[in-house]
Each structure stands twice: as C-alpha cells, then as structure tokens.
Image (cartoon, rainbow, N blue to C red):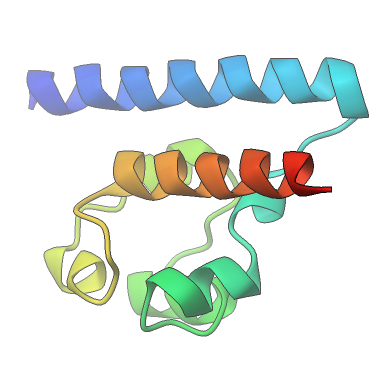
Length: 101
C-alpha cells in the first residue's frame, strides 16, 4: 500500500510539473487535453473518456482520480498496466503533436 502511495505521488509530481510547464506556456491545461477520444481509440478498447469512466463507475476529473483506478479488468482493456503508463504515453503523444508542425 505504501509503495502504491509513493507511485501515486510520483505520478502526481510528474503530472503537476508538466501541467505547470504547459500552464505557463499556454494558459490552463486540462487532463482532457491529454486523454482525448483519439488517444482512447488508439490505445484502449474504450471509445472515449465517457466509456472509460463508465467502466470504472466514477468520473475522472483529475490525475488523482485516474491514479486511484486499480481495477485490473479496466486496465486489461488498455495497452497500459496503470495510470502512470497511461499518463506517460499521453504526455508523449501530446508533446509529439505539439512539435509536429
């Protein structure tokens, strides 16, 4: 349990740092900008955030909510083992798209 909390802090710390960086550069930054419909369709069996949250049974309004998802059945339908992997890939995709032009 303690190890999970450290991992969550690590996820939170990474996300918050990235969020601060983007906020200073672009204004308000939202989780939904990372976890887009296209992202869900490419890396999961869910069509969008609404389908993902329906599978979880609760809304995902923050990275903290995402980090709390521990349902293996949910993660089985994605290319990720956990929230940290999902966020890492989402950030990678977001940055790549930002520099693609």
